[in-house]
Amino acid sequence: AGTEQIEVPADASAQPLAYVFKTLADQFVGQVSLCKVVSGTISPDDRLIASTTSAEERLHGLFHMRGKEQLPCIRAVAGDIVAVAKLTNTTTGTTLAPRNMPVRVVAQQHAPPVFGLALKPLTQTDDDKLSGALHRLLAEDPCLSVDRNHAHQTVLSGAGDTHLAVALERLARKFGVRVETEDIRVPYRETVVGVGDAEGKVKKQSGGHGQYAVANLRVSPLERGAGFEFVDSIVGGAIPRNYIPAVQKGIEEAMNTGGAHGFPVIDVRVECYDGKYHSVDSSDMAFKNAAATGFKEALGRAGAVILEPISLLKVTIPSAYQGDVLADLTTRRGRVIGTSAGEHGEQEVSALVPTAEIIRYALDLRSLTAGRGRFVATHDHDEILPNNLVSKVVKAATSGSHAGGGASRAAAR
Image (cartoon, rainbow, N blue to C red; front, side, top):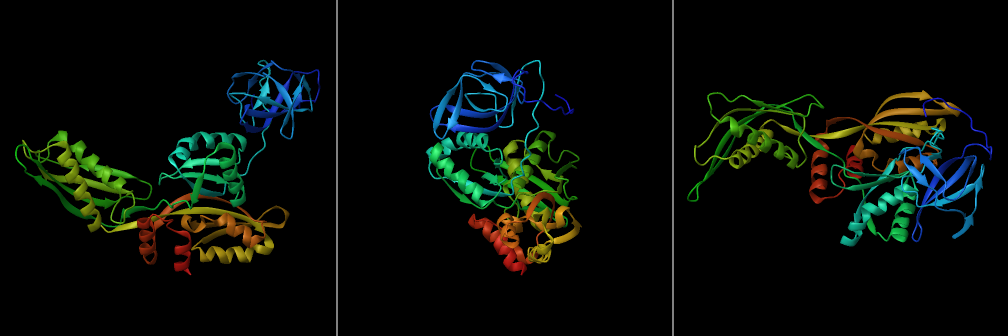
């Protein structure tokens, strides 16, 4: 099973070879795999190897599907379509072949998902069943994908709104899981543009051991994508060495909790250059809290800004729609970086567009091009959010609604 491609003749007397092209979930039988017999003859109780897992599968029973009826099948020869129940290690796209025949049928390539919605279970029972139901749903339809994003949303993605509507209807009808949907939240982040110093201090005394810690911090920017750098510049034992990890942990927790605008902080350098401690009242917890307080204060003094994700958008359209698409990208604060001629008189437009502006682009492009356009979007980099959009993004994030898209586009226009 290497890179060499060979042609397998449809010979009923040859080695058995079957390709699973679809998987169904049946409430009585369980998983049902629909197979095309590519070569040879297969019969009940045959044992074949699944190409995806190298596990042996026993074909307990074969049957033909006629609507909801399942008609027993004694044997299936090359060219037949047959159903097999309860193949535990077999998914859509799997090739079933003898152990001494390591071949794999070239699977159909599916277009990547371009439209997603976040799912919110209606009840606790729905929440408990959601993960298993989605797993079975994906087994039936490999064009769907499920992801857990930065905002802890369960995101179901597919080819468009109709595709997802059908999938959610099946989720409720076949698996008994009811959900409501919402737009995907945009992963905004924060960073700084300058240098800021602050003293984080915890001082509490309530009888017995108190809490005392002082950490002097300096926050400065790093280049995009650098993440986080902690620098220990303590000299002379101003803070004992055993408390330094607590200082760093306090800073990291404060970064994840959110900065001045409430978004996680990235691409900063934090230097701890001085501090104070008490031989009795200091502790790891005290220094962690002091560092968190000092970091947030220093962040504000260093000039915190919001970073918005920018996507590389590649749109393929008939030439007649190029002007409309380019004009629409401009309203989305997009920067066109190139156009090129494709096949069959099509044009490919490449642009850098804020991710918030293309959350529902699959629906908008369909409307613009009468369903003849297609696109692929991938994350490219982060940029500072324009000042005129900051208040709208923060307000939307505070209210828990989708931050981006419509609000940003209205402001951009």
